Length: 96
Image 1: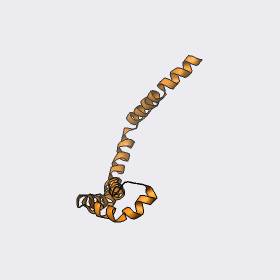
Image 2: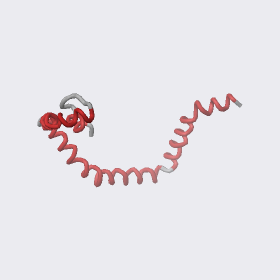
Image 3: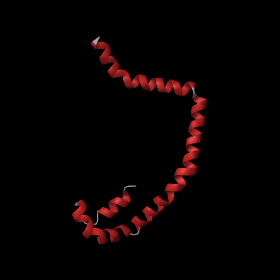
């Protein structure tokens, strides 16, 4: 009995993965339609919404705007968050 439990624990994820792959092969038509719908949704909704923010963030970081804002906000940010000088703004812009 103990041997069976150890074997199930060892191969549990492999069994689940194989069952998932078999179901993908058996129902491939439905999966392809769902994948196409997901890509269309991403291309028409998510990408146009986030792309301007990615561009604006990169422009702000390349023009040293984050350095200026970090220098201005240093008095307020350092006591509150205890971060090094001018690192708060540049790190917050870079973590998108």
